[in-house]
Amino acid sequence: MAIDKLLREKLMKELSDSSIKGKRRQYLRKIMMWQFMVKFSYGLKRVLDIIVASVLMILLSPVFVLTAIVIYLEDPGPVFFMQKRVGKDGRFFDFYKFRSMVVNAEKLKDKILKQNESGDGVIFKMKRDPRITKSGRIIRRFSIDELPQLYNVLLGDMSLVGPRPPLPREVAEYSLEDRKRLHIKPGITCIWQVSGRSDIPFNEQVELDMQYIRSQGVWGDLKILLKTIPAVITGKGAY
Image (cartoon, rainbow, N blue to C red):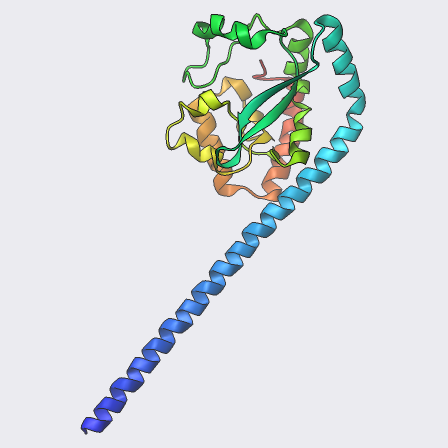
């Protein structure tokens, strides 16, 4: 009887161990499948970024040339505006735009900081910013100033869709929740860009960015890109 009991206990232990190992294998398979799907999704997103950015740069090349000429004729100086921005995981990168302000705009900013119209105080927004040139108001209204960021997309610093890249001084004021925006690549357009743009308060921008991060996917990106077209045409919230 004692031997039978020992054999029975040994068998139960083996079955138990076998069950645990089986669950572990099943769990590992699920993890590996999830990792594969995530990598595949990111890879597909990157392919979409490269194809769309390349096509747009070719199709819009006349707009690039015309915009550059207009900017220089109104206010001689650099046609492009380059700035350090914060990308994925806090990495700095060179961010490109068409210059829509006077050449010394950054130096003049300190004089108008008190006129910031952003209620949250993290980002600087001013509807009647005196530094913006006449041509700058037009290219800002229709987001033409953002077109050089297609080059950032090709470089891999940005994506077509994602949270807008913040300035280092803005990130310095971020809360821990706000910093979650830096978990993915920044983008040229995003949910709040097609939902009101600068009219949306910063805290709501963060909520919409987090909503995108939780549910991001290629089909979702395509929907946002399509919604960007009417948002650009109407110019709502662009200043």
